[in-house]
Image (cartoon, rainbow, N blue to C red; front, side):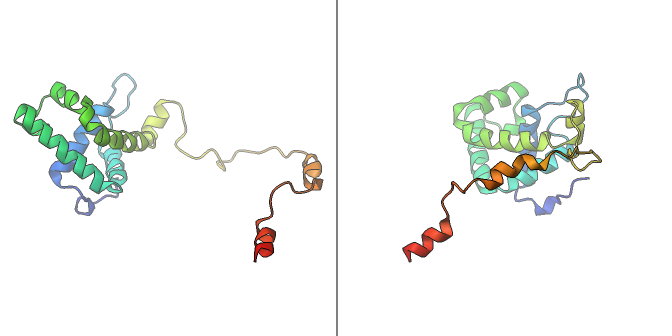
Length: 162
């Protein structure tokens, strides 16, 4: 269950609806692979969390998107049909907004366990997970340990310069 409370969001309900629609356009659900779209409730909650870190910039870009929708179609972005929304998003004028949304959406989407499972990846870290790590021959590091340092000693350099 998402841990984002709607009242904690820096976005209005309409802005969240626009963000959810854009996320769904970027990564739609796939029946073939059995994965949800990025507009899935759990994934979208994560997207909102990531987008909240960039709220001021995203809100500014989203307002420009809404303005272009009104100018071109005399409707808000959400009132447009799928094709019109996609064309508007592909417009070069929305590249800032779209770039930020792609980053947030892809990050949140590929953190979801259902998506990872569909591409045969575990949704848990690889270690410790009960994996045995074979111990190697530590004496192989002896030549490295015996070698004189080849890096600059910052502390010694500071003392000399004082």
